[in-house]
Image: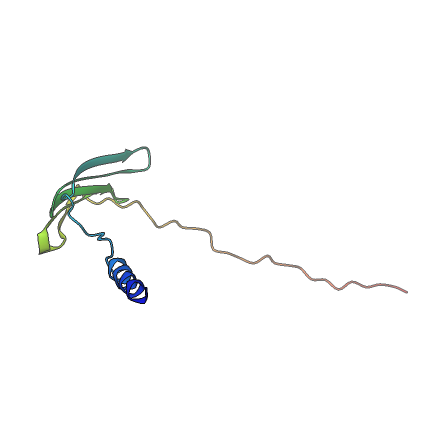
Length: 117
């Protein structure tokens, strides 16, 4: 009986040591997306395509100086993130200097107050 109990205990410990594998076989990632925001105050967007280890895409944003910044990028295996940044248009800056009146503190005319008793 003790021998049977010892054998069952060894088998139970050996079977419990097998952990499930969360890193099993899986398919390579494959997707494609594109989105855009455009209204009175914003204009920007992003698109990307991925097939396994190869990813490429671009995004853009309209800058406050009226230029458009475009970033084109790719990732190919171990190359890392490689980006090229371009600008379209010419920067225009609004007049920022506004002349305000200089501050002058109020002038008080202090006069003695005589009180009769």
